[in-house]
Length: 336
Image (cartoon, rainbow, N blue to C red):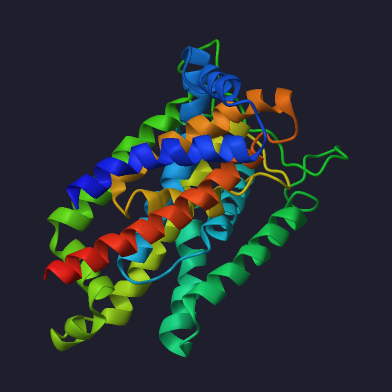
């Protein structure tokens, strides 16, 4: 099994190479452009970190829910609803000192994401509604809610553009490098990943959550409140996704608008899968795809591939990962 995980980075590089060739792009130049745009200098590395931040945060949320057997596909909606709540908090608390506004907005984003995920949790626990279906459908509700807010209650005064009032510079995260957009919000990622890892691996409640996800029948036999644990896991997942939106709002964007999220809530799912649902593995997986996103802009010089390469790469990597995971499980069962 250890050998299998050692092959994962090699397999990702191989899939990247195959994807580039399949897109009809020159391999050597494409790899060079990807490297130059993502890792060659501090500008590329900072772009990589910024692209990876929401991916990792959503992946952490996905991991928590999926470890409990709750297949949360609503990270996008939870991220957007959380940031809608954060935008409302920013508007209502505009007169507050910046030192109060910043943590308040971040907390409200997390609470909003948790509450939105809680809707799907309640539907599942009280009405037996499939979590996959409810979380997918709630994504679209949140997207349309954001569209309404930036054209109505949260629209900037006197502006014809559908966007919110920009946050004051003092409210946003501090910029770590004046030459780039790198902000202090990225420091939340390793803290969150470590906290999730410690919770799932080292605590009693984390063990119960993993047991419920691994074998709910055994959990019920042990008289664990399975439904309660699953709903809580889904709400923690939503909180992490909402936190991802808050980091983007306070860090990279500073305003709300229609396309606030380019799909971070969906793209974080394959990041979690390729991390093997490991919180610490999500950092490596997120950085890999963050680097691809950062470097893919350079590839547009060769045609229309650009970020489409990343989506194709994610799809191919997930399919290969699922196939190899199943092969590893089959081999383990055969040995047993």
